[in-house]
Length: 192
Image 1 (cartoon, rainbow, N blue to C red):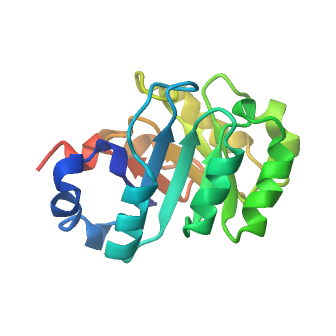
Image 2: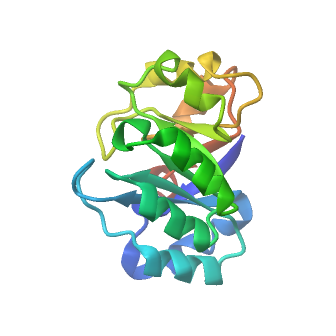
């Protein structure tokens, strides 16, 4: 399984210095956007996205933890995000947004919070390019290992991202589950 580094967990004052030794081991960067409404605010923004895009030769994926993600999704798609994940419960018309993201040449992923069942969004997953399964509540909280099993209920062949308080010792829990990418933050930036 490939690793994506969660920029959220890095020290924003020296992010490039922290990223450089990790780059050979990463498949991509993971960029969380939080608006203070859907989840508590965190300051990852378009300026930082552009700096990373121009400085690092890796794809950047965006996870929108915001209410009304429509305009933000398309802005990040225009800036070159490889894929954009949003929470369907925060969106007025999730089906239209999945299609609009693709029109802007990014892939459209659904983010599944712990309280969202796969069956409740199955019709949307049929239109999605992938799914991001959160193993912790959006915006923070404890690791919930039982959430990982949601991957088994997803449509076969759908790309799966595991995100949410993932640590190195959780790798074994993913061994027999569908998954293409695991997002790690403090597991990468919080240790030597």
